[in-house]
Amino acid sequence: MQRPSSTDGFHPIKSKNSEEQPTRERSFFGRPVSYDDASPSSLEIGGTDDASEAWSDMQVRHSQEAGGASLIEHGLNFMRSTQFFVIAAVVIFLLIVALLTTTNQGAVAPIRGEAYLTTNEFAGIRIAKPNEAVLITGGLGFIGSHVVDLLLHRGFSVTILDDESNGHNHNRFAKELVPHDITVVGDLPEIGNGNSFTHVIHLAAAISVAESMNDPDKYERINYGGSEKVFNWIRNYNQHVSQSEDDAATFIHKVTAASSAAVYGDPDPTLLPLRETAPYGGKSPYADTKFRMEGLMREFVAKQNEASGGPKASAVALRFFNVFGPRQDPKNPYSGVISLFLEAALHDKDINVLGDGEMTRDFVYVKDVARAIVMSLLQESTDNEATFDNFNVCTGKSITINTLADQVRQKMNSSSDVKHLAPRDGDIRESTCNSEKAAKGLQFTSTVTQEEGLENTAMWFREQSTNSGERKLEYQSHTQE
Image (cartoon, rainbow, N blue to C red):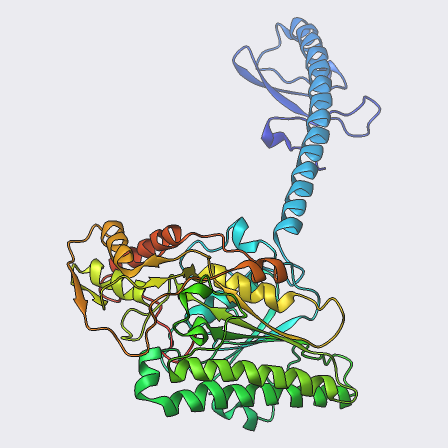
C-alpha cells in the first residue's frame, strides 16, 4: 500500500545513512524554519543571535518528532492490516450472500410492480438445472404471466408462445416471445429460432363457460384443435431431436396443461368434496373441450412411449378451480367473479350476483396455482415410465357467492349494493374440492387462504386505481388461462 504523502499531514522517515534526507518545515519563534538532519549549518533562521540555543532545541524537538513518527508509522501499519482483514471479511460475506440469492443461470429477473416471491411461494420448487428450458403457451395471460415470473426466478430459460390477442402484460425477461396462435403452431417449422426445450406448459385457451355456450365453435377450434396441434408439435420436435446430431438438442420429457373443475359439472352432493375419480359431468362446450383435451394428453403419452428411439414423456392435467388474483382483467365480461366484484366495489357500483348467491366455490390464489404448475412440471417419474395423470388445484375450502360479495364490500370499504340477477346457463351449483391427491402426488398444498388472497388482490386493485390518467392494470388476453 502506498504511504500517505506529506500533503496528508505525514512525513516519510529515513535513516541517517540515506543519501537524501527529508526536509521539514516548522514554525520557530513565529518565523518559518527549514532544516534537515545533517548539521546545524543547514539551519536558516531569521536571526543569528540564538543559533546555538535554537539548534539544541531543534535536536530535542526532532528527536521527539522522530520517535512520534515511528509510533505513527507502526500505528498506520496496524491500521492498514486491520483494514485489509475487515475489507476481506466484507467481500467474503457479500460473495456468500450473492451465491445464496442467485441461481446458476445468472442474475434474477426483476418482477413487474409488486413484491412477488415469499418463502411459501418458493416452497417445493427447486433451482433450474443447466440447460433446462421451458416453452409456455399463453405465457402473457393471467395465470401464465405468474408462471413465467416464477420460472425466471428459479433460473429457467423461458420462451413464450402467445398470440397477443388482447394481452398487454409482456414479460420482458423471457428469452423469447413467439407471437403465434396455437391453432397454427403445427404449421410452424420451428419455435424459438431453433431453441431446445426440456418442458412444455400449455395454458393457451378460451376460458369462459358463458361464452362457450354462445360460440361453441370457437372453443372447439382453440381448446381442442389448438391443443391437438401443440401435442403433435411436441412429438415432432422429439422425433427431430432423436435424429439430430446436435449434442445441445434436448428432449421434451414433461408436459403440464391447464384443465378445469368444470369437467365435474353439477355433481351429486354425495360426491362432495370432489375427487379426481368423480365422473365427467360437464355442462358446457368449455367443459367438454377441456375434458377431451385430457384425452389428447393420454394419447400423446402413449404415442410418445411407442416411438422408436424417442424419449419417455409424462404429462399432467391440472384441474383448476376458481382462480383469482392480481392481473385478472375486470373489464372482460367473462372474467372471474372476484375481479368483477372488486372493480364494481372500487367505484361504488352495484355488485351483480347471478342467481340467489348461495352457490359455493373454491377460490384458489393465482400464485398458488403458478406454484402447482411448476411443481407438477418438475416432478420426475419414479418408475421411469411415460405416464399421464390429473390433479385438482384448489384450497379444499369453499364459500358462497353472497359471502364473497360481503367480503369484497368490506375489503374495499365500499357503499356498493348487491343485486341478484337471473342465473347464467352452464353455471354449477356446488363446487367443493378434495385436494388430497395433489398433496400426495405433487407435494402441493395451497399456502394462501381465500381471505388473504382477497386482501392481496384488493390492495392491487387499489394501487392500480391510484395510477390515474394512464390506468396500469395489467389486463390479460381474453383467450388465455
